Image 1 (cartoon, rainbow, N blue to C red):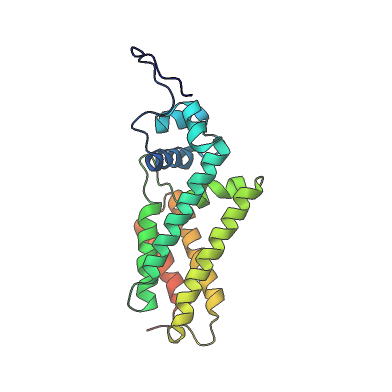
Image 2 (cartoon, rainbow, N blue to C red):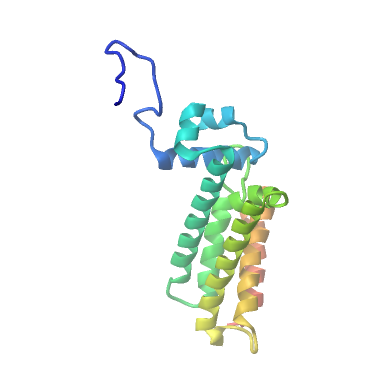
Length: 207
């Protein structure tokens, strides 16, 4: 039997009626992105999402579970974006440049400072002591490697003679990592573009 609220009661209980899981998760990710996992308190998450502690626990579980959910969301978004970018028509050189340009724009975003990549910026630190985070991070890197390698293998004529698409795929992922770190350190668009254009020259044969 469910006990109903007294008709005159105005005390809020549970999640607010306007609660939206996707919105709350996005705001929680922003909080983790800004301060990192360890430095983000439950009070920070409550303030960011508009949910009190019982509501946070009810919706996502504990702080670790909420953080893992934000990592999984970033993983899904990153892979979807990469799949879309790699499926674009045109030479591999131009496809890669477009992917890196888009990533650079994201990495340079942030209301207070350039935030870089959420996964690189927060999960690398946590992965040292947390095997769950380390496993997810390794999975994401492998998926990125495979995505790049598949597109490169489909166009071997655009690679340098004798180039290994698998190794080049890992290099393509590594360029994303470099862009994320440099952006977090404050590199401007021109500096990031110089990095990924040089990287594309290594991956692709000269036109």
